[in-house]
Length: 102
Image (cartoon, rainbow, N blue to C red; front, side):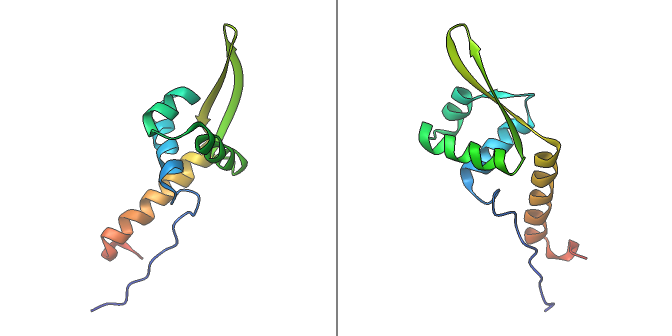
């Protein structure tokens, strides 16, 4: 049996809701708060907190606008976020197939 080395996962992306937000944003130019909330089934408060954490890490960009007279929060993934997610997925895959770790 060979010794296995587990590479560290990104702690920000190990959270289910933050990973879900990032997954949504990889498939769209942007997504609004309501869409992300409905898709993830998160509460408004929890979603706000997780979006703030991702924004502070520069994984996502948040733009506050208005749609008519209603405030709208739009989120988009940044190049830093795209790379972080790709790295996170690569490490997860290595956990499943330890022979690929070099």
